[in-house]
Length: 508
Image 1 (cartoon, rainbow, N blue to C red):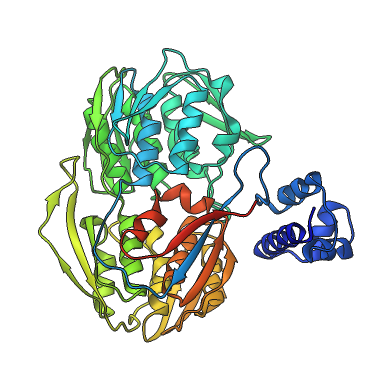
Image 2 (image 1 turned 180 degrees about the vertical axis):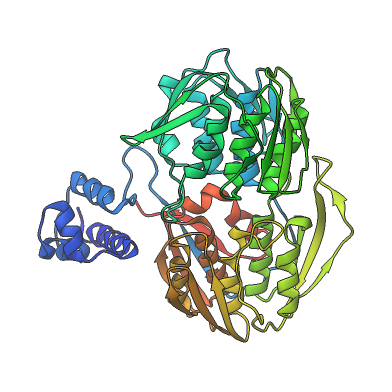
């Protein structure tokens, strides 16, 4: 290997190690080598085999290089540019993955319109294909899904399943297809411990018993078990509510679900279930009444609505770059609190008239954001279940607060680690102080500066870093952006179309 190649490999290893929070000694101990050897590798002063590179990547849980397929994707961002024009919000990631799982309830053909071509969707499609489900893209962005009469669950692609937390939503539909099945532990973003117990508690009412051993959830279904009273969810979570809905959808009887999430992806799932012939009362509230249908065999055609979190991302892009930008097809009912907070901070924006999404139910508007002098909000920024400020929109307020005058307290109480990732903004010039694992204090305004850094392993903080790079004068590099591709379709290209300058590249 040449000196330049060794230097580039060394820098990638150093960045991955630092991002994980390890010292050189910790990495050396994991590899069974010396700290001095790790130091030489990171400085590019030691030959290194492909086997050792693979071992280092496994130890750091980071794709250093790839063999036999393209290496990790990076972004080079030329910041300090104003955005202008208009940009459309794409369909909801979280709704699309829920609907893909819900298609297993249907023996007939399901067509989903405008599905986002993102890594999270690809992982679910890989899992579906491995168990015998036929799925094909039609008309560009539409998906046709046809399940087999018998699922080949023993052939499940566990590698794909482990890369997405959405695989948990197989529990609800699969319990209607077989008496026993196994799915691997769920993966996805690195957001600390996120218990699956609320799922187990809810589904036990339908006879599903789950034990977790050896990296797998082993599920057994006791037939003839029915909820004897209303199911009260111990957590008002989105995926928990969706699993309970899918379990109730083919339960022969009436199920009442209380403390249910009424968030956007849950509403889309309810609308889809109605297309399947399942009556759902209370959509948009915390009490859902489901009139189950024991067998579903329908050809259905459904259009999931637009993504309010992507909409918030694009609004934040306009704010931090002091741009005038029109964000089209914004699902406004799921952003009303966020917009109210932004207007309190001094954001100037115009809303167009409301119109219906393709599903005929969700309300959309076109929103024009204008350059504004922002001040910090009086109250802290913190998430609440819908109709409160969306949990996934909290990180965007870190970049927005860094652009505002004053101090902003952000309390991300839901996830164990996500607030910590927001401190990455300090690399770009922001003042973000970590008060504890859930709270950060952001001081603004910020004179953003360019930097080269690894992508945080959580989706929304990763996008926040990218948005800050758009605001920073000079050229920044964001390495290994797989996590962004999990949730956003062609984000760099779409931002480039409204004035950004982002280039994708690979090192090796």
